[in-house]
Length: 106
Image (cartoon, rainbow, N blue to C red; front, side, top):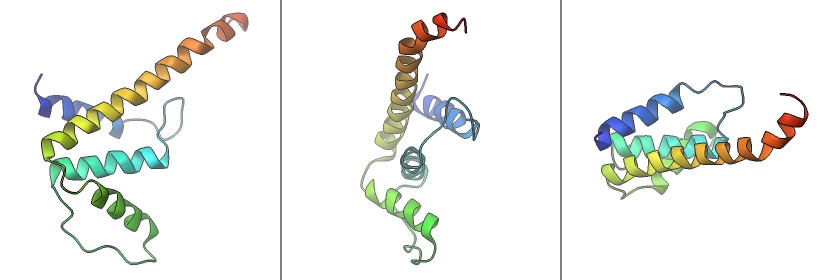
């Protein structure tokens, strides 16, 4: 599987996560995925920084600006790594909670 295919699969996973549920992303994770997606698909920031009253857009712009200079390929690799790390952490939580779940007959 090529880097582009793996990246597109990772993007599809993130875009299809439910807003609520056992697997969710924090705001900082969302910003990290956003910044790496923009860097992967567009490259360096090419717009003016949003105004102070556009809080969400400004945070997104700042996150994207923070990865400026990263190649598109490296940004794709990092996006995939962040996704895999997120699921690795989930797997550890599930593994650690397994004895508790057995005790409750879950």
